[in-house]
Length: 203
Image (cartoon, rainbow, N blue to C red):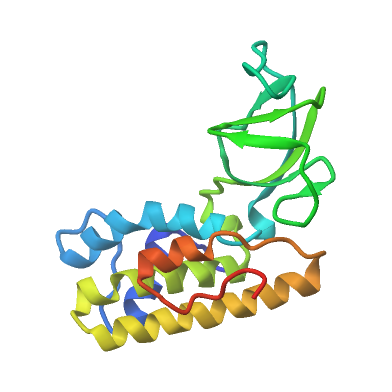
């Protein structure tokens, strides 16, 4: 894949809505300012929205010195780069079955003595992203900036519809490549985009 960066992603998004490219977020124009403003939040939401292979990580956590006040024997601090917890031990988040842990802020409470986890990490090196994650980000940016840039409600709705269709496809690909995993935060992106018919996980 050719070199990918936040600016190249935003440029693709701008071109897809019929606008001009940018070469930097510091350019003195509305295109660059809007992209610079929305990109960090949209990037985190997009990483959280799907178990992308290029954003997965594993770690084994050691318990903190202080135990929870009640209910659990130990607490574990999530890694600083954790955007979304996917799995604790053998328990995949969102899959049926009673978990033997509880999330509380940035801590995981449990009776385990050590905690192996899989998670989505803050992979801010876009050049390592797979092609579907790049496309998801381009579509997400395009759907977010379409109205601020063009003032066209019709174009905004068209881009939102493209994004919904893409995530349905991403879910299907994910199901073919790996055992089922919950896809999580589509509704979070839906609220940002104002999409009412967002594909709800499990539907």
